[in-house]
Length: 152
Image (cartoon, rainbow, N blue to C red; front, side, top):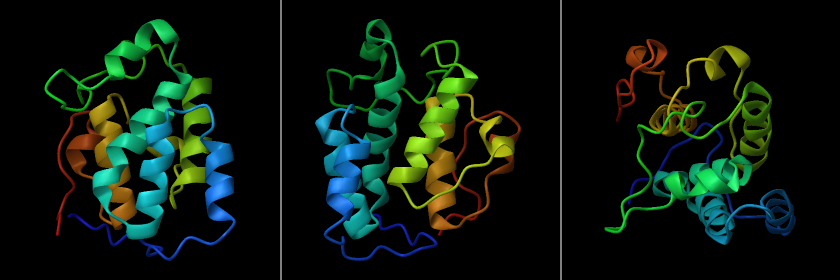
């Protein structure tokens, strides 16, 4: 189990957290809420892929959602999926994704950071680093996918 010592450490869910998360994620796949609740309770970064994919799926056109589905062998959607070209997301939709992500996770994303995120993998690495309080990898800022710098 990989716990994420994110900047605001996980704490027990308050009675208001679940209804608020349920409302925020009501148009996402059910696994998204389950993963969000588990992440908020444990800080385990293993839940992030389900949250990220579920939030994005909510905004992707139905005809493109199959690209986000796990492969037959159970592996998550490819990190190489491009947010704009492959999933059809535009800048307004990306802002909606940011707002929902900020509602669900204890993270803030500014416009400068957002412009460097090109693929699903970039988004996963970015959020993992951000939640752990680690610096973003220079390679990510240079538009390529890599692991968090100085990962502990």
